[in-house]
Image (cartoon, rainbow, N blue to C red; front, side, top):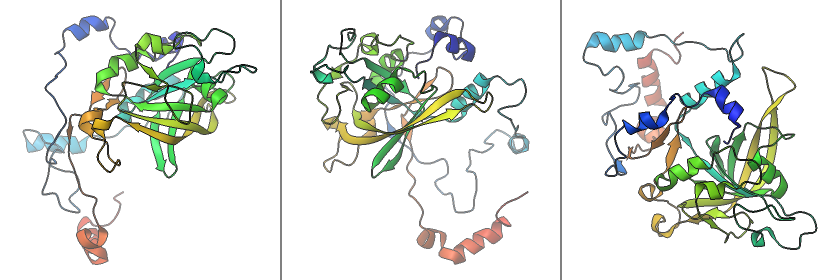
Length: 327
């Protein structure tokens, strides 16, 4: 997620000329806001009912009808004159919230170095011959895509020929540790997105605790993280720009999880659930915006036969709706 100063200036992610002035006028962090469950907006919702009561929930029926009358705008991502950063800004503001994969990686030691990476210099060092270069970076182009084997994906706006620090380390050591960012170290995780040069460890900038007790990988995990996963590099695929053919603009990295680390107070007795009120995950939105998870709802997954009524019930719903798709 770390980008060069030049790229950041082109993107204009921060909309505030004086952010600290804007922040000073905002309410303090709500320490009393904690994870809780509520009902859905329409607990009595039934199959075939469509959008719930929040759709067009305004003071007048006319205003509600106006919401339904609003048109959608079709955008060609490669239309003439459209700058590439526009697509980036649009997508990160629309695909939300995104989980944040906090990736700890380090390079392999130089050939001939007899010591394993874990015995090398600590964070912030690494300038000596043979010592691993450590990196810590948050990625919101991140998600889980399978559980057997446990697979995760990272998206990097970087080419194989000129890799960013995390990708460079992954190609070198083929391993890393991915942690989920929590509320209690959000500022530190954001600090790790700094555009530091390779060899300058973000661990020192963030002030977080590297814990070198991983079983399968040499990279340290984040001690403050409630949940972390040791990972091996499974594959890397490079992509070419559609707007500028021939230029490599990004890589998709697939990681396979080999060990899970969960703080004991967040784990249930069966060791198969993590308590969200302890994890307190933070998600990424557009621009420089992050989101908390403090209010949630539960909705059981429906069963076609028992809840929908099988094919007979389905045909009734289909008849009621007047068909599958309206042109």
